Length: 61
Image 1 (tube, rainbow, N blue to C red):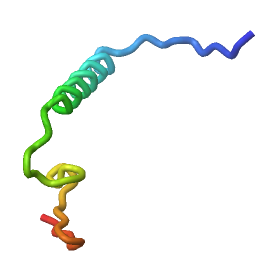
Image 2 (image 1 turned 120 degrees about the vertical axis):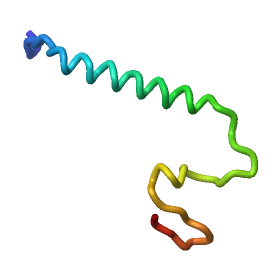
Image 3 (image 1 turned 90 degrees about the vertical axis):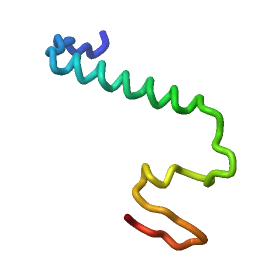
């Protein structure tokens, strides 16, 4: 017999948090469907990570 843990019912706040997380994941997936930027920077989006790097020099805002 497998170790079965009882499933607890989720609170309303937990359900709202899960729905919000799913909406955010859907928005991220939708943004990933956009065509690549022409003449843009390579690599991760610098605004998302809070710094810019040009020729090995990182500038933090």
